[in-house]
Image (cartoon, rainbow, N blue to C red; front, side, top):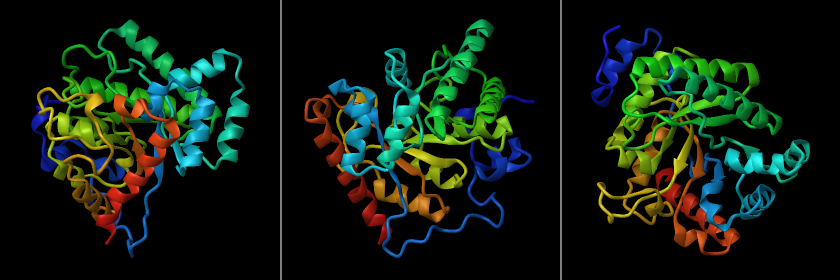
Length: 318
């Protein structure tokens, strides 16, 4: 197949590259088209704590769970490093799952860095084994999904090759019951734009393919936020929720500059309206790396976070 410039794909290009429009990845391509989500002033979103938000406090995963529940979240997005640390120190996954269930929490996604996308065959084989091990651990905790970022990719990985590799990852997920979500990192040479991630998901040709979006990474990668309105509910299952300030500028802004939603200049209301227009209500997962938030009480950081998440969504619900 002819290679496409994934940095300049539009909706027509995407449709051409996929014979079946990947079972609802694109808005309007699902059966009977996506219907706008019902609003009536009610908040249809679920709120999840990505533990990066309180990562600087260096808490054990058990305390992260307790804080998320106490602050009012219904979802958790832990890091595999913390989960493996807990397990390697003799912690029981059965007990950890019970702790989650007792608190009414679900692991909606998890952060891992398996090198599934790299060109080197040996490294990629190891990456798939790492991903399988990660997903097996998550399945024991009742988790639903795992992030699949372009970890370890050097230079630009051919998007068609990336699609084949993403499909291989999805097939492992089928065996275990955990869905890998293709994640873009703004500015990454392999998956740095929304269009690139969606192209790869479409070409993977797998019914579970989906996209892990992020407000900051959409901005950092130079994608137009209106591109998100082209996606359907299948693509938009979990979305990293955050904001970014006017300064530092795009060229130098980094992960640590992210701020609470509503405290920056991101078009949050328009993003939420776009979700609702295509019938999507993704789990919103607060992902921040701000050292100022790491310096305060972790419960306070988490509680401020969920309050600001809900406040950021409210104007779009009308």
